[in-house]
Image 1 (tube, rainbow, N blue to C red):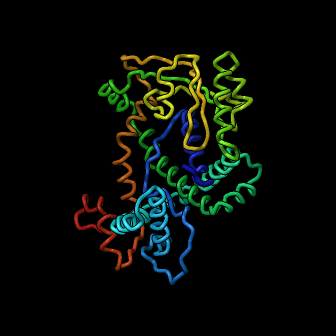
Image 2: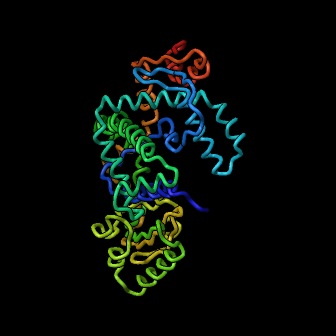
Image 3: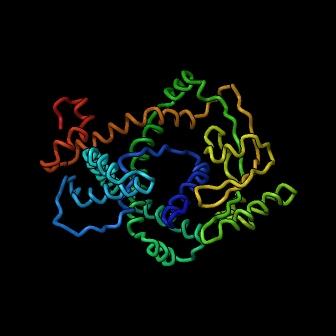
Length: 370
């Protein structure tokens, strides 16, 4: 199916993140709080009307126009995936209270991000994302990227704002929830958790991969597929795969990394890759793997380590397991505390729709609280 430039842009990041995330020494889980920020994709087509404040959140506000933009963007996304527009609108209208509650929670998290002073880290990550998209699309300047985006009906500033909000949410949850669980869990508790859950910490089967990536961006896709087959044939008949990566890969860091990816548990591999390499042995090359209409990956098995039934204590892995187990509950408490410390005033016309959802956790612990 044909994809717009924006869809390819987002898919590029999904692919890039999948490989890059494996190089982290300590990987915190990214908890999904609220909405993904889909308003960034919406283009405002309706005439402006006198706006209405649906909720005040400390010094910020949630407006009716913002809610409508969010709803329109979400409906458009569902329609693009084949859903009937009327059905999508009806379903979303029934969830309006949940949508507004999520926007209020999101506003609280973004405000907390400002208090933590994360702007510099956020801006650095946003700029890195734009640079990566430029590289993946063979563009040499930010201006050229923005022109291409605008040509395809995408507002660069809306994308920037979407990314800023998404990254801010991730950083806040990492620092205020996940990092605190990780570091504040005492060593004796870590050891006790390991002893009680040894079956979780057996050594899994792992693979070490090298990747050669060919992008479709700005190229004839049939020609890219032909080239991928030629490169696989060359690698299988003795040409250095490392050399092929350096000379042909479209990954920006290919010359530096030689396409190498840190060891990955086979169970954690995306099925799109795992199904292609599950029978391959050390030194063997995969067939070309098409990735979301973005491009083609060719993988080499640099190493393969068999699983073991023996348990092994790894402080980081045990702490990460504890983070996974405790995250949801601690996150609920974090959000409850944010709401309790905030000034939240919901427009009376929307309060019956929003309050039961927004303050559900508070009512469970403090009956009658809103």
